Length: 138
Image (cartoon, rainbow, N blue to C red; front, side, top):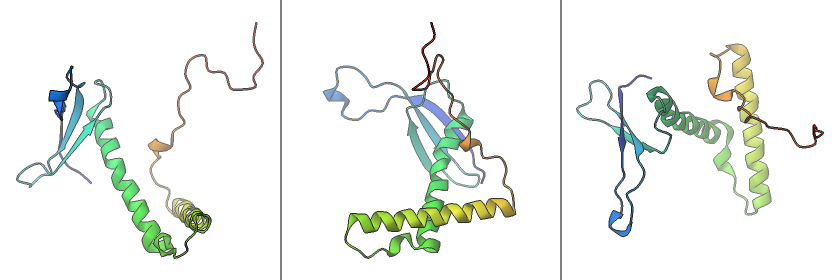
């Protein structure tokens, strides 16, 4: 998937006549595919100002991956076939569908290893973080 993107810091204006101060600046991300007469998609983002355009695009397009997973859960694994009435049954059905999907994803990964999955990196711990139950130091 390839496209052209532009970003701009803007202040959204929605019912600003009721506000005493202007809204904070946000990112406006614009997608304009090659060959298109005009931009096709727009996103607002409240990420900090120093955020790179690559990170903005990665996060905006992450939704596409999630939508594809959801569509596959419905089409291939029957997530949308539940016809019961109780929350417990629905929860059980959903959990089994997701477990089956995880198994299929692991099998696919073992057959043709994908590029390293950058979105699965561990979270950074804040400075001075001490897990619960660690002994206090003097």
